[in-house]
Image (cartoon, rainbow, N blue to C red; front, top):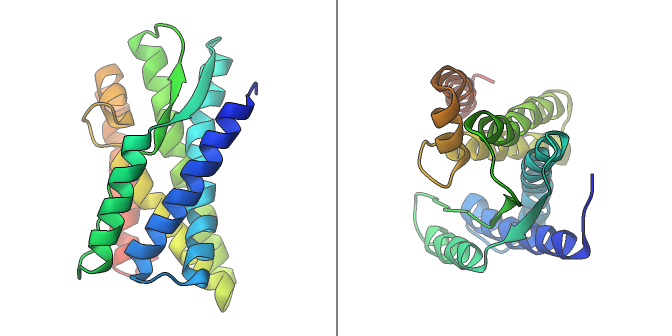
Length: 195
């Protein structure tokens, strides 16, 4: 995968800001342990999500790189601080995106877009295994990693631009419906404690 120092910087800044935000939303505090748990669960999910887009785009012959969106990071911080003092946590997180430097067909755009949520589903299952076989802090990291990645998948599959779901829906509604159904089912089972 081709990359640049700007992309690495943007990914690192976005990851740290989002880790801070998820810490506030999940734990309603500024705890170091919560920050570390959020960084691990979110870090894996965010980085793999974005790099999956980039990898598929590059495999299809496009030049692609992640760029942060400062306004999106500010919105995430505001939402996180509001959620910290609210009984219901909510975070609108749009820290940036993988930009493709040429036109893509609907099919190519759909394939590139489906890669991100798919990566989150796979990571959620890996974190589920970690939570199932771990104990103590490892179990907690596994559980929150699973929850974070399922939320990332479901959120990104919403069929509204500029989210991945809008491009997948425009390309193939069956693929969109299938991956959304799997994501929502896993998230519901997770929230009910069934997995």
